[in-house]
Image (cartoon, rainbow, N blue to C red):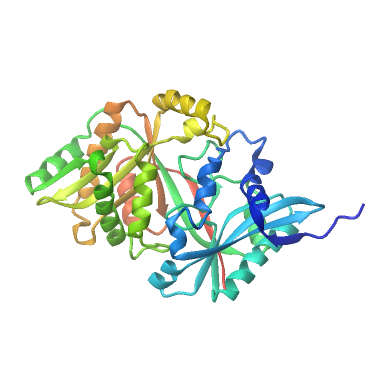
Length: 374
């Protein structure tokens, strides 16, 4: 029987939306490193009425069909805040999953490209799921272990599919592995003492005022990251949404602020690597899975430093070393063994050198692609 042509259709209705959400299981069903995302969280993230990201962005979802069965999926996204911040007519694709089928991949990427072009975009980058403030990139190097919490994972052949469809590298994102030290670093101890004499101090996050604390994170983050490639400022609504999502996950001792004269000027936000638990839950969170989560999260050994920032005027003063020192002390006290610093832009040499000076080593590389013009 001749192989039918690929058909790409917009997702229409609840049944096809469910197919879009569950399609990755077809790709990863025999891959022991894949961490199934929680379906209800994926559904909320992709629902314009549920996630505040869509207040400043629009999207279209597509499924590729071959021989009457789904062969791939993709989302096309136009984020007005990104366009405004970068003064660039750029759109993105995300949530890309596909069988090893070059025809299906080309058709999916072509559908996303066409939709973005009709939205006024002249460049397409991705995958962003749905922005750089969420899960983004494709794993390029580092298939020796499962991804850390809120980091991507994908088959190796995805890079070939994107290259065959005419996409090229935009930026690489780096993940560094840093063992929790088993003793105090005397250099950092001296640095911390000197900085504290100059009026700098570190305090942990106040969980009773999580929304207010995350407003400080928003202010510092939007200042520290504003010049970085791919940055999109966090809105008030997104911070409110983040507060609700992070409240049951944050460990106060691992969320630190650096203050100068009583004003927060820097922060570190590390989370336990909840993927060590989620990999055993199958993407669902019913009563049995919740009980399992509560039991197993006590056995998590690793952390992910997932957000950090120092206001521009406070950079290059050793604050990163002070925050790392206090974070390392807390991690050791709580029994964690290793941390991943992710992700870092490949050209953010200042932060990369600081991480390497602390003993971190490159562990994984991720890639974001581009196509210009669309």
